[in-house]
Every structure is written in structure tokens, then in C-alpha cells.
Image (cartoon, rainbow, N blue to C red; front, top):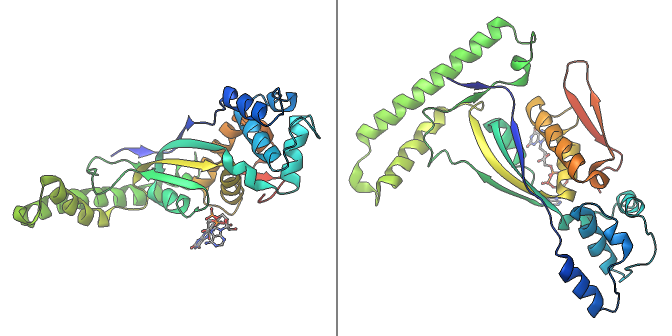
Amino acid sequence: MKLLSKAKVYLVSRPSVDWEQVAAFLADEGVPPVPESIRAGSDSSNAIVEISARLCYMSYGRGRSDIADFIHNLLDRKDGSVLEHVNYGFALTGVSRSLTHELVRHRAGFAFSQRSQRYVDESESSFVLPPALAQEGAGSEQASEILQKALETAADSYAKLVDALGDVIPRDRFDSATDRRKAIRQAARSVLPNATETKIFVTANVRAWRHFIEMRGAVYADWEIRAVALQILDLLQEEAPLLFGDFEVAELPDGTRTATPEFSKV
Ligand SMILES: Cc1cc2nc3c(=O)[nH]c(=O)nc-3n(C[C@H](O)[C@H](O)[C@H](O)COP(=O)(O)OP(=O)(O)OC[C@H]3O[C@@H](n4cnc5c(N)ncnc54)[C@H](O)[C@@H]3O)c2cc1C
């Protein structure tokens, strides 16, 4: 039985700009060439925010010429709707079903694709150690033993249920062998615990990521999802420092981290 203690977070998709199309749009609208303020954004996310925001007043090349100042002003005024044009997608592995159950509660601006427990056999699945037990010295031997035993029992029950249902569920009730396997696994998964490892692809826009990190990076959030929110923030602060740089990361005495934004829920 494989026990995992740290999620893997892969930044898979990021925004990009077609500068030829931007130039064509601005030329057609009589605003050539591409204003320096837009070019000043070193990453595409800044440029998308500025291009979309300036369209509202057709103010290209006017007003604030410093992109940092421009974005700071948007965050300060909570003009968050333009942040919805910028999307980042992550593949998460080594996360528990309890984490993904909390993750998918985030609705606005999110898209999810999660590994199916109906299609995919869970006989060899891994389990995620709750951070309280994974931390060095924090999990008592007794607690670890209790968890280990419970997970072994669950894995064993799952395998036995798959076998038992395989013997009794009639083949002629299904159009295909795949449908029958799904029927078996969807029943057997009822004994799998929250700690069962899963994988999920999650894409969200910058406004939604900011809200997610604020909620799940707070001290009140579950430790596992908080750690993942912080891993996501680390990557996004590198990718788009102007859009995520206001989050302050703090180390707590228990070794975990929290994230607090200067600009709350933009
Ligand atoms: C520490 C913590 C403890 C929690 N405990 C529990 C718990 O015990 N039980 C439980 O059920 N949940 C719990 N949750 C989940 C929480 O209630 C939210 O479901 C989750 O955090 C998603 O937040 P959200 O709705 O703001 O986000 P999103 O769904 O991403 O929405 C973002 C924002 O969009 C707006 N919005 C979205 N949908 C609507 C809508 N339909 N109508 C109006 N406005 C909308 C709101 O302003 C919302 O804040 C907890 C969350 C945290 C962080």
C-alpha cells in the first residue's frame, strides 16, 4: 500500500497573446502602434488584463503608463472582472478525495476534470496521509497504526467487493464489458476512504484563483488543501507577480504556511 505525503502541482496551461491580432485591432481602431504600456507587461497575463480593461474606455496609450501601477489600481478598486480573461490550468496528483471534494465547491470561473472511480480500478490505489500524520514527530505511532490498519481494511474490502460483485452481476444486463465493470466499481468504491489518492485537472481564471487562495490559504482551511493553495500561489507569483504579488505568505510555528492578500476578493 502506497502512502503519499505531498501533492504534486504541475502548471500545465498559461495565457498567451497574439500580438499581430492586437496590432491589427488597434490599427483598425486608429490607435497604432501597440502602446508601450501594454508591451511593458513582461508576461502575457498583464497584457491581457490591460488590453481588456482599456477597451472599456478605448484608452490605449493614455493614462497610467506603468503596468505595475495600472494593475495595482485595478486591484485596489476591485475591478476584478478583467482578471477573468486570464486562465491558468494545473494538474494535481497525490491529493486526497477529501481535498478534491473541497476544491470542487469553488464554482465561479473554475473547470474540473477528475480521475473517475467508475472507469478506473482502485485496487492498487495510493492513499494520502493527512498532514498532521505526515509531519515529522507530529503523528504518534499509535495514530499512524490506526490509520494504516483502516486503510488496509478499506483496500482489502474494495478488492473483495470487486470480486464478489464480479461473480453475481449478470453479464447480459449490460451492453458492454466496460459498462459492467463500471457497475461493479461504482458499487465497490463505497468502501474507499476520503484518503484515497486522486488526480484532477483544474483551470481557473485569475479572479477565481485569487479567491480560492484567499479562502484556502487562510489559517482556518484544512491543512492539505492549504498546502496545495500555497503551492499554486508559489507558481502563480512566479508567473504573474503583478497579479498575485500582494499575497503575503507566513510560516506558522507548526511548520505550515498561510497566504493573506492585501486586496481581498477583487
Ligand atoms: C475554512 C472553510 C471551512 C468550510 N466549511 C464548510 C462546511 O462546513 N460546510 C460546507 O458546506 N462548506 C464549507 N466550506 C466551503 C464554503 O462554504 C464554500 O462553498 C467554498 O469555500 C467556496 O467558496 P465560494 O462559494 O465563495 O466560491 P465560488 O463558488 O468560487 O464563488 C466565488 C464567489 O462568487 C459568488 N457566487 C458564486 N456562486 C454564486 C451564487 N450561486 N449566487 C451568488 N453569488 C455566487 C460569491 O461571491 C462567491 O464568494 C468551507 C470553506 C472554508 C474555506
